[in-house]
Image 1 (cartoon, rainbow, N blue to C red):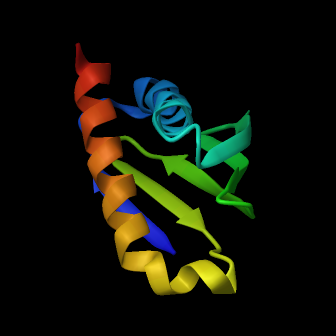
Image 2 (image 1 turned 180 degrees about the horizontal axis):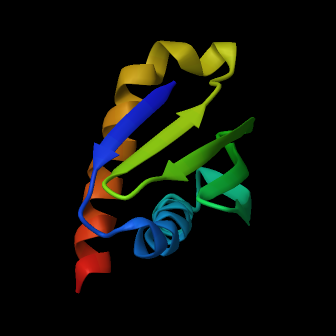
Length: 101
């Protein structure tokens, strides 16, 4: 799965915002998400978590005006890929607006 979003935060603020997006998703959906781990390396935030009992991992690459979220979905979750992508986009857009404040 690959989700691309445009932003106007710049790279440094975008990385900080990416961390907040993951933390925000984990908090909002704490009954469904657990064990969130994040690691920053350059312009990339690598993450892993459990969602509805499935292990997920991926990375968020932040560029000057684009954020790319990549993750391999477990086979059981692939039928929900469209819904997952929409949830990520909606939450990321909302969190990026908060990062501008």
